[in-house]
Amino acid sequence: MSPPAATPARRAHWLPALGVAGVAVVLASGHVCARFAFAHGVTVVTAATTRTVAASLLLLALLRIRGIAVLPLPRAARAAAALGALIAAQTALVQVSVKLVPVTLAILTMYTFPFFTAIGMRLTRQGRMTPRLVASLACAFAGLALVLGVGGEAPAAAGILAALGAALAFSTALVLTPKLAPDLPAPLRAFFMVATAASIFVVASAATGDFRLPETDAARLGLAGLSLLYAIGFAGLFLLLPLLGPIAIAVTLNLEPLAVAAISWAALGEALTPAQVAGGLLVVAAVVYYQARGERP
Image (cartoon, rainbow, N blue to C red; front, side, top):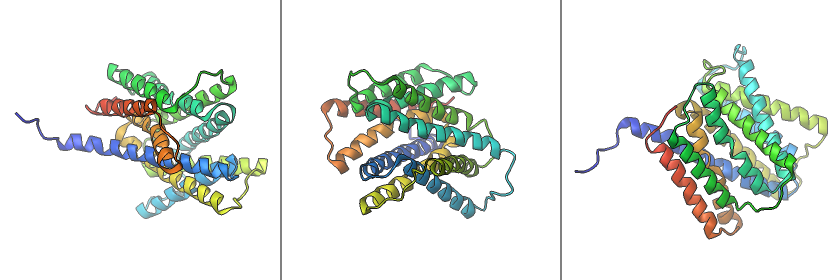
């Protein structure tokens, strides 16, 4: 007997999951552009400011197209602004970590955020720590360790703490987004979040004097690429969050470091070892395993 055809409900479940996988690829492409921009003299403050401003403008345009007014500010805007502060903290802490420890170790430590997200959902009674979830997270984390090829040298404790802080900030934003300002339309809530982050980085730019426009075509190209791709990825992520839920989003985003490795191999000629390929397949298997039955909190 042939297996039953996929139901509309199951197809509808996979659509947002595929959307988040696309977001992971877009964000990964942004990381590769960022690496290119930094190599040509773009500062961290410049990159953080331009990408959050670009995301704010993209979401503002989406709000205008959909006829959603930003003003007068709704009461829930303060809650969304608090979420934006978490996003700004996550961005800053990741950059601090990358400065203090090897980037692969910083990324791997940052990707403990799916575990923190699952714990946060359990503590706030929004989800359960099921055996399927624990197995998927453990499998994905093991795969990332292979993909990123982390060595055994002793890292700087401050760098590890910064990456863990970034993971906690991002997972807290994922967990609290459905609970804070639940009546706000998703595009409006995402706009207030990223506009808050952009405001924080604009102030930081003015305070540090470290915002500098790129002087070469290569730097301008890298900055434009990372700003556009981050804007698209951020907007897509928080628009899809209400459809898929924080835990499923966190599990699926494990594809992002894998996409970074694959894009770096294709675009920059960086070699991939057999262990990295095996790790990548392990990550994909973990994501598919978790999503296969459409498990929900």
